[in-house]
Image (cartoon, rainbow, N blue to C red; front, side):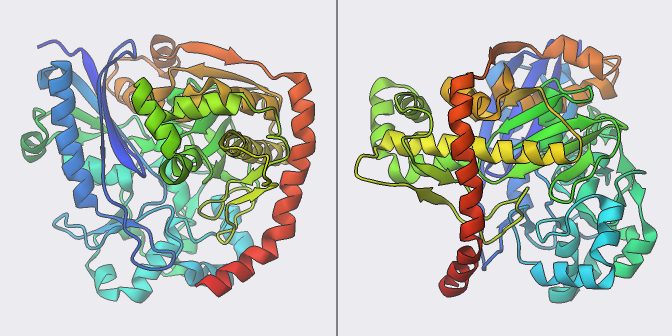
Length: 509
């Protein structure tokens, strides 16, 4: 049977998305399923990889059925996953403990030990990234110290997409775009730094072989085919970091192009042709060989508005049911009626601490300026503006490293909101293009698969075939000037509250 489609698996923090695309990048069928996140202790954030696989198997079957697609028509499979997930497995492929997610910050003591043992400057010189508890290295050391029996039984430490590829093919893989999670990964040369690993006491045999994201690792095994409804022999590429796949799916393949992420978390990814580092930003390989992404990652993305909807948005939820639309459309309508600056209400979107550029796990969300004249609309707009301010903070930090951005390509659920996207354009003073936003991450994974098996001759060909800009938002200069004053206060608020966040954490835990 003729191969007509590419299948993509996006393993996200809150759920898994399966999408089947034709070779022109049109989604033929898509499915989303969730899994539970566990918080067994302070700073502990875990998920069960076995549940990931159950959801993936269910989702593939459902997607093929929904689209009336025969598994014989699938030409290749691409996979992407969240960053910094630490998954130890034994020689038989059994997961030895729950996956420690990127949100997991239990390994703070190991982070401090790494700085003392090797030196923070040496680690940064090697890896180009902050020495922070969210990364994989301190998590491995935490397991070694606190769960020695697990460490002894571990054959390989895999990351999220590597685990899915293993379940499909039976082959170990570590792609370059996820390598930045290990502080003994040389970010300039794309290899393991044995001397640094030795100083940390980590055996490199515990790491899987390195692959480019579009490299074919193996093909679907008989057992995986039975569980997923696929057929044996479909090629599977290594895949990569979800943010990097999303960047590819947004059409970012040339130097200076930038992806703005409006998913559960927020942030930006700027493509650079050489490894440019900044101590407050994240540097990783793109899913395109010999290209890098200078990234700013914030916890304050679409998840902030999701929190409002769940906890305070009963009115919007009910009205949305009556009108048979999304509650986020209702919230966008409310925000649009409020003037820029939310009449003096500022929101700090640090709902789970904050990553770049402040790297403060004790920071917390704040509404500043509440008064009796403030409405739900003011709160909603201030949330959108707070996320926009965090984006600008990261962009300005990138400028300190000599990296400048003119235009952003915005993807993720938040990009569906015309109001929120315009707010970001006004705050940053930059034009924002919106491609087909809902499927950018899975499209990126699908393009990797297509390049890997030769459906696309190269990445530029893949982008030309599949990525189309729907609309562009240009900044309003008057609003940009208004936001300039509020942004200064936004930055000042964190500095004034930084010590108070520490005190609050101490007395509440």
